[in-house]
Image (cartoon, rainbow, N blue to C red; front, side, top):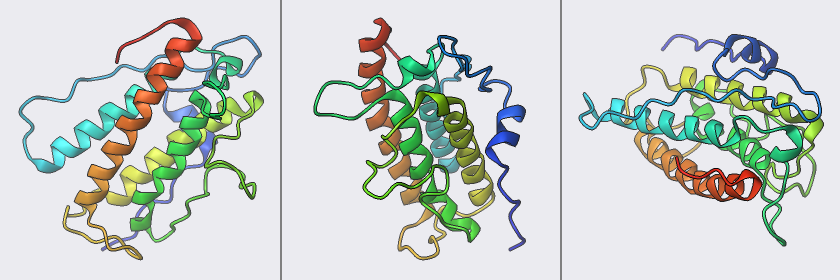
Length: 195
């Protein structure tokens, strides 16, 4: 197997992903454009396509929940005692993408945010870092795609006893769970609901 490409830096991803690109970080200004989301086909070509399409749908749903909000809105917490916020979910899922990163030989579950001992899995948020957190999320997703491109679903991840198929299913489950949280958080912020 040849070497996988190095993952881009968050800044490189921020400029290349025009659909999801942060457009600024000024207080009171929305930093995320709303991405276009394509419904996965009802009759996928094969199992791999079905898994990839459903995961991409879930990834885009997360970005839709954050689209059009200001940094201050993205860090609004749900209800006490929860520390959950939309930006916290983005940060958390940046790290969860590391399930795929195992395949590129550079696993690092804390790669995309500054690690603070005792931090709540990325839920410690700062509105001044919202654009950087989005770029880190996008870089994490890009790295995930590159790490598993062309691998068989039965491929077992290095250092773990999970097949790529299991990881896809786990990631879809993880995103679906957190997108439910994101839906409630978004409704609390501005009343917006739905996928």
